Image (cartoon, rainbow, N blue to C red; front, side):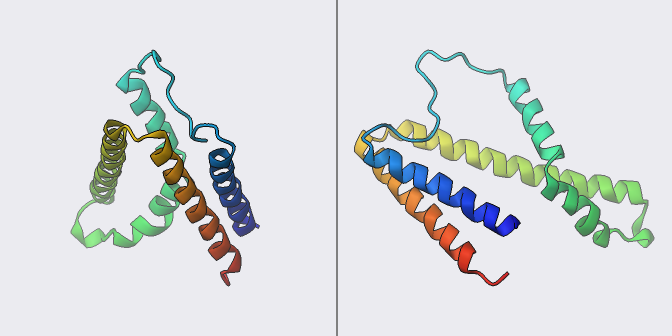
Length: 139
């Protein structure tokens, strides 16, 4: 059931991207309007924290995967969990900073309308291909 929901989602997003490029409109992605007010960094960080802490994958990692690396012979359970949690937060920070850096780089490129349309088309095709691969997978 989850597999087919994922297939449907990928088809929806990929199809929407492709459809928007042939309709002659702009990109299907949400764009910031000119003159939009900036959001304080603390509000963004708070929102990211809530998303991360309620992420089912993170909950699974900390309840099923991380305890395998805890060894009672090497100190207190709490200290080991704290260290592994700090490593996880560092990895989250690096990933987030990478996404922010990539987004800032793309923004500075100021792609033409044609280049943006081609990127959207390519992304749409990739998403549809991923949906096809997921639909035909055996798991």
